[in-house]
Image 1: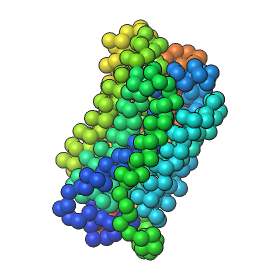
Image 2: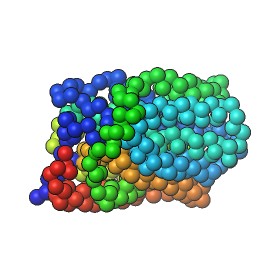
Image 3: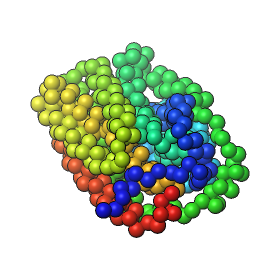
Image 4: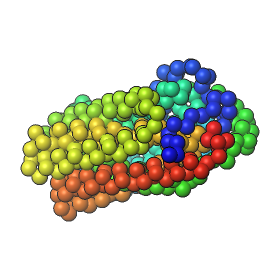
Amino acid sequence: MPRDPIEVRVDPIVDIAAESPPLPGRTSGLHDVLGAVAASTVVTLPVFLVGSLAVQIRADLHFGAAALGLVVAGAALAAAAASIPAGHLAERVGGVRVMRVAAVVSAAALALVASAVGSWPALLGTLVLAGVASGAVQPAANLFLSRRVDPRHQGLAFGIKQSAIPLAGLLAGLAVPAVGLTVGWRWAFWGAAALAVSATVAVPRPRRPLAGRREAVRHRPAPEPIGPLVALAAGFGLSLMSCTSLGTFLVTSAVGAGIGRGTAGLVAALASLASLSARVVVGLRADRRRGGHLAVVAVLLGIGAIGFLLLALGAASHAAVIFVPGALLAYGAGWGWNGLFNFAVVRAHPIAPARATGVTQAGGRVGGMLGPLGFGLVAAHLTFAAAWGMAAAEAVGGAGLILLGRRLLRASTARRPPAAMR
């Protein structure tokens, strides 16, 4: 039986991507991980704030659920377009430099929403800018962690890094009762802009001059085949079609199900906390396994599909007792696997992890674009219950494609010469 490619580890002697690798036996640096979390969080905040504060924003700017889906879809499309070029750029200039620039761009986008946006087309344009920053951060942060964190702790590091997304959801959910319903939704964006500026300080400095990086990149081996990545990208995209609708529509759907606005924001915050915790725990357990990580991703998606079905039932029956557990399960399991997925892809592609995750992130971003757009259209023309049922089907389909990608990856690794696996 071919060796599971997820067991592949980077040779600590070979500086493949010109990012200083961790010394054998060195534990992961907390500052490095927190820097990646800070950058990943602030670039995700614009979309989550729009989703959590959608009731107030839509009332002020006068647009409906379909337009809200289009706004978020535009941000995801921009992120998809940026992911692959950003992966190649990160391999050349380093993950640190890309993360810092992305945090600055996100701060500018948040400040624009707070100060100048007066219509949904303007909001769309600003979120497109934020989407470019979001698409650039993920492959850059993946490269950064793969080179700076001890391989024995990378599962946990990737889980913590991916917790930035539910952390952004948590902050956005708390912003509803704390800011949005008190001093106004624009002040929430001003506060997020300040956080984004602070994140640039949290990102560690590069360890190597730019000229040294370029020289190392010229001498690295050829990257791994792209074929299996296409299947994984398709599965990642279909899975995220279900997940991204949570951040955008959970609060609006909860209000439609009879839950008060402030309480709905707290439900979103609690559900985001469940996803954050799941990503960390799943990453910690990944460090104790020898492989099979993508299979675990598929199982989590299956459990998450049950949560989406509960959301559908809760929305249809206006029953908070069903809706709230569904939100926790959909967020916790259905969106608790992202760190494990990126960890698995990085382990299988040690030569150029930013390039590899740039491809899979592009698929995920396309799913992130189509998911809210489709969800918004179904919710507007049918019901929220129908939209959540569609999300459950997307989660199951995504799990199947990820298992297919895993099979292709194992076959590709079995044919790979030993030197290429280093």
